[in-house]
Image 1 (tube, rainbow, N blue to C red):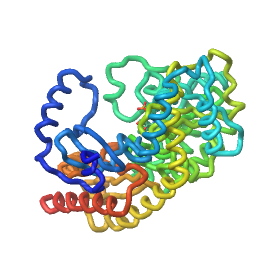
Image 2: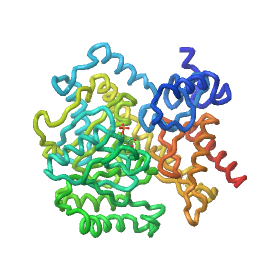
Image 3: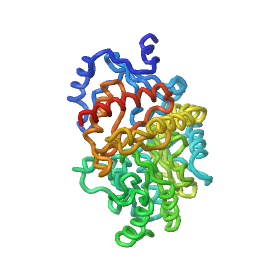
Image 4: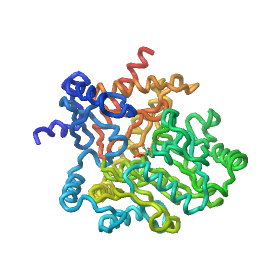
Length: 451
Ligand SMILES: Cc1ncc(COP(=O)(O)O)c(C=O)c1O
């Protein structure tokens, strides 16, 4: 345990220049053998984690405000999650819920059904990744409605498998070279309350986007009676940590109901308590027909769920399944995660989110390159601009801040073109938030000094 002692200090401590010698060697080896499609922004080579801390292969410790892309909800290696995994691994590692029964599969489904938005009875399908949950939702929406067309939003990220990728409209590089995707997919503008949709009236973003959907898309390109599902991230994740206003989600719900379209909430990133409620869509009081979740669901074990109204999940035996989906070890981790979220970490996400928002409330007044700080709970985006009036994007400055934060022991990630996201484990405390904000503010001030 002496080795993990250094992580228990809860704040970063750097003992080598970065990357250290062991990290350098590993990055070189990785470069030769790992798929070059991966997107690494800086050379963190992780060895072990505890709470919100990561230790690298050279003994440096970092404060992790990226959480493995918003995954480790209860922190790295929470003792209760580790114990649940160890116990389950010694008992039963795999059985395949597709072909056989086991109690924990039912238990987790019951718990997810109970926390899913709205009062209608639910059924649950388990997968292994966010993209798999989205694939399942695409298939179920088509199956249930007997319709073919799908709608998603500009800036959306729903995953990289061919079906999910057809809905994704985040970066051209994610689609380039992969040929024809699913046919019958349409994209429509997402309400951007900072820039306005295409630069028009930020305060009118919800109305403009609902109007575009009804008056442009439905009139000119696709009849709503042919649409199986509309997929929406209640807070766009990869698109820049952009929350859809409640009135937009409520308007979308109405449109879906009117036309018999499945409203599919992609809460792969925003779900499982990250926003201070179980689901980001809870802030709008809306019940989607289908909800997809993954990332935070099992504190880092690969698991996803597609939860649908029971009357919607009407596909027949054999229509869809997965060998590994709902693996017993992942489920054990998830049940322990749910206990921890319920008993303390969702409340902590809300409290610490408010703390960070309060501390950054005047950043856009004090810093000319900060356009806006926005978010809910511990899903917070800092938008960087070259000019606050024109709101010109500043991706180079954002990237520099991400890299320099790493050099100071703080792990953060970008999101969208020009946003830096804060998505730490939900257990962070004030001292850790203070360190992160002080570090970022120091870097921002330094950049502004020489601009
Ligand atoms: C909103 C959203 N949907 C789907 C996905 C895809 O999840 P995965 O990478 O687990 O396939 C992601 C991943 O970032 C996401 O943020």
